Length: 406
Image 1 (tube, rainbow, N blue to C red):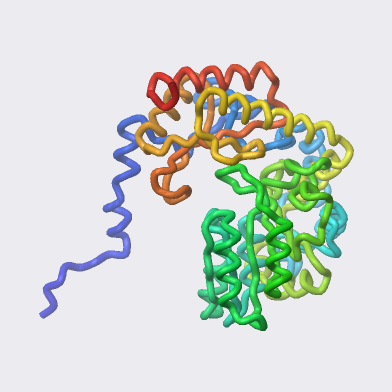
Image 2: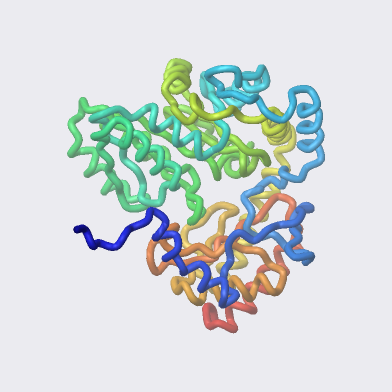
């Protein structure tokens, strides 16, 4: 007779107590419900807070022009497409936005997905077949890795290689070991989401060409953020769209909406359209969100001063936090990590700032490497000089109390 205790699939759920323990201490920083947003301010539990942790880089998520565009489209098309792009879920609006996006990034064609996460999931899993090689930076976003894992799970024998962050010598050693005629794809973030630094794209292009690899660029934190006109990493390095073969971006950051797209040669995009499972088996991007993203693109093109203001604010907080004595790493963008290292001190500083009305994001392993816990701060184009000065002053004061800086 089997006397082994009965195991339930739910045991792991009931045995997970870490979050409850942290909640009991008052240091739990996640899933804080925001009641409303007004420009650079958010309201939590009736309190006004200065948002210093948003990816709403251009401040368009609360822009009245995006709201109006969404409302008008809602009235015409309804709340949902009620189907996938493959079936009844493609609107004329999808194709109009795709045409404009392809033009914006200098590519032949583009394809919209329902989220940025699904864009990486779908495009990468479609592109990678059995026996192919994919080479990634160890700081690449989780959605990139999940796209690779989906390919591995459905097709098997995907050869994954990882190199240390921006270590091009290590990347070249990996490429040297892969047979020249094997299919291979280098995947990299244009702007890294936690560190705020910019990928060395021209050198990556050179290595890709030398070793006959494709290059896939994740521009989630680059479009609307870097480059003279906010056209991302390729523009940052001299307005050179040819530096990448495929380019993706989400609409949940600079575009003030939700969704995402991938762009490249028309035949490549057509292939992804027919083989990306997250596109084929998911309802398409809702009409109101398409309209909001399209209006955001129009504003980016017509108001370069908004992008310049964001870049000015980024330089201000990079200089300010550095002068305060924080370790901010190699950031060059509105993403400025305050690297603390110790998890406990990171949560303590987060709570002190939260109590003083400053909203930032604590980040610990596995989102960052062990012993690199940090507060992820970010600025927006709509932040005023006074707001940024106040935020840096308060953060500096609380960090000194905890001996994080001197």
